[in-house]
Structure formats: C-alpha cells, structure tokens
Image (cartoon, rainbow, N blue to C red; front, side, top):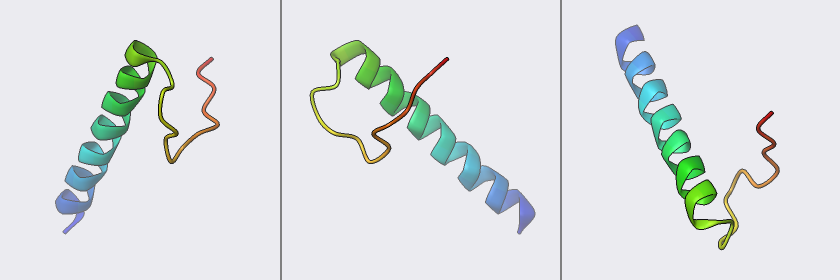
Length: 40
C-alpha cells in the first residue's frame, strides 16, 4: 500500500515537472491550475 502511494506521488510530481517545463518552454499561454509558482 505504501509503495502504491509513493508510486502515485512520483507520477504526480513528474507530471507537474513536465507541465512546468512545458510552461517555461512555450511560455505561459494557458493558465495552469497551480498558477502562482515562483521558482527561486
């Protein structure tokens, strides 16, 4: 059960990372659900 949760978390974080890379590459053309993100 714990492994399943960890796997889901990794999937979600990799998806978010991919979305962020797409946003940085393409520019913020569309509003993302996590709009106010400031990467220091």
